[in-house]
Structures are given as structure tokens and as C-alpha cells.
Image: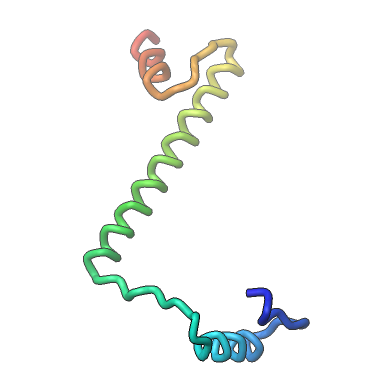
Length: 86
């Protein structure tokens, strides 16, 4: 929030900027999420992390294969197919 930027940022100045911003008539507030919404959001975060880790592992395995001179196309399906042939 550019109007509230001051030099030497610290907790006191952050609190001061928040207090000033809350008093503005054009301030928009975010509705509080229900517990169910928070749970769904947490599940989505966990799923995203699992997908990222899976992608990382697939890429790492492809690199190991490449070090051994075995080319594997990009994609998990091609890696699984390569393992079945080995």
C-alpha cells in the first residue's frame, strides 16, 4: 500500500498503517472463511504439494536414466512405461 510506505519498516509502523487503512471509507474487507472452506483449502494445498513432489521425482528419475544413456520422454506415463520394459 503505497500511501502507507515509510522508511525503516517495523512492527509499530505496520500496525500504524493498518490502523489508518481500516479507518478509510473505501476499505474493503475479506469475509471470514468457514471451517469447511478452510479444510477444502488445506486439502487443495496438500494435493498441490504432492503433485509438485511427484513431478520433481519423475524429473529426477529421468535425469538418472539419462546419466545411464537411456532417454525417457517427458511425462509420468512414459516413465512408468519405461520401468515396465526394464
